[in-house]
Image (cartoon, rainbow, N blue to C red; front, side, top):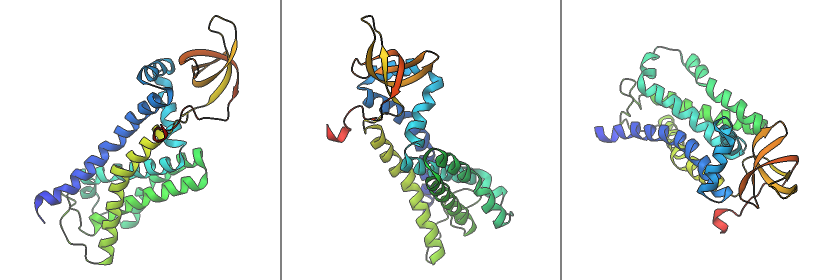
Length: 257
């Protein structure tokens, strides 16, 4: 195998490392724009909620959607470990016992599993932690079996003929598919499904003609009520005496337009 081909594995990990933060940054903006009905609406909503509440969109999209939460947690577990290993981590810890390496590799997947489980339930958390840990063990196995060089972080080109190396290669391919295909695809679907990322409320709104009941998407909490996006009026308003609307669908999904 040529040096160019061996270096391809490193470029794929780098691409996966860029993909996850790009998705987390860009997809919530797409969610706002599609769900609220346009770029101007997304801008107004962002200004109303402020940076302090921006994380609500991320939480509502990525941690309150069970499948998306599991995929994101697994990808974050994989890319953080693979990147550190390729940039000196594997070389520094070559003499470490396998048990210790495996135990250290479980820390971040376990933490992310707790977060996912808190939002979506125990078994979703277990799935996120277990999948992330499996992908990390695949990285450990790549270096332990010599499939990847601890010095350069590149794949060595050693053919995977035995069952063990083939399993390691399958885990690597699965990790890259999750990072480069499944995560962005699922994220776009979640952004364009027309559902709110936060609470939908029925509130009293007074825009100068007297109080009226209106359907709002909550953007920010205030002592007297909420700041929200008035769905029928297509504007940011203040609402009081709010009650939760169990229907969180604001518009039809993109694929049904």
